[in-house]
Length: 213
Image (tube, rainbow, N blue to C red):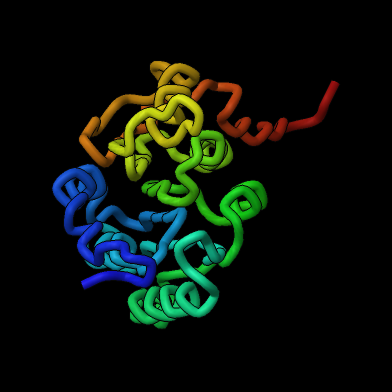
């Protein structure tokens, strides 16, 4: 069975052996916040909400503007969006899922949501876009957060750099602030291990007691 445009419906099943163990590191955590960039049909998001973000105070956010592309016209994209909304409806009805129908650069730049525990980057696979998604999300990631990149396995391209080059840039720039959780054929996952003190919020100033001299 195929999606409009010829994409196999089994793509998430194919990546589950790599995706699921990395995501399940956070299973059942209280008030877990999950953000997915590029929700498409919603299969990954539905699995995370059912198997990882299970606590009643956990919440998921889907960032996807659902743009037309070279494979799909507006009618096909509308069908994809309708299917995704239906798939996530049980959690949306329970006030545990929020849609953000915006470009990820806009959504992350203007992010006013809570700190993120689990982030899945599966939007544009063009290297500068992947890198920008991670950098814009970085201030909103907790220490201990897990970030999963889809389609590491598309291979390096000389002229059109994609996910592998973006991952290399992230690893070089962030160094020991991050650690590799999974370096798979398709899914790459890292953990935020440390944040520089300058990135952490300053403690509230202590109130002085008594009269000043």
